Image (cartoon, rainbow, N blue to C red):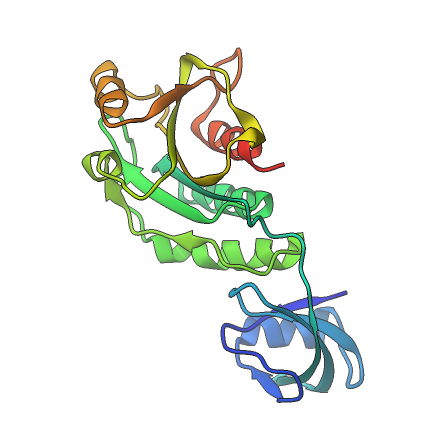
Length: 230
């Protein structure tokens, strides 16, 4: 079943017009959607609907939602926020955003630390990657994408039940036994400095060993998310 995204309230029986031209052209040119076809509609707010296509041209895609679907692919018992030091390429960040969305994280937090090699990025550029992955993986709730924070701001993060940071000398992951609101921080290539590790432990973070080998930052972030979401 093809899935389309529209960030608005959805009600059964009320027509919707998708205005995103990328979605419209994809439906018309690539998928060859026709009136009468059935599609799924998500709004990034945790809702999924079956809908009937009313019109599909090069300029417009209109549907009428008719059935709300109970979606069991979202995580309700754990809300995972993954903080990642900015990677050295925008393309890496976009790919990481896709993979973390597929796994089911709730929030993505880019940050800068002492060894960050690429200290600037427009985080809004990650949103298309998130939406594309959300449609593909069967999810229906947006990943919240934070503005880029400083390491000091990560240290002050509150309202979390558990906080961890990746560290080759850390302890084993508690895995999916841990529930609630969780924050995991992944450092840059080369990892966190010794001083940063001390500061994180003082701030209540627990060092977490991901693998026997040293992982690239993007790999570490993906492995981290999979430890808590399964």
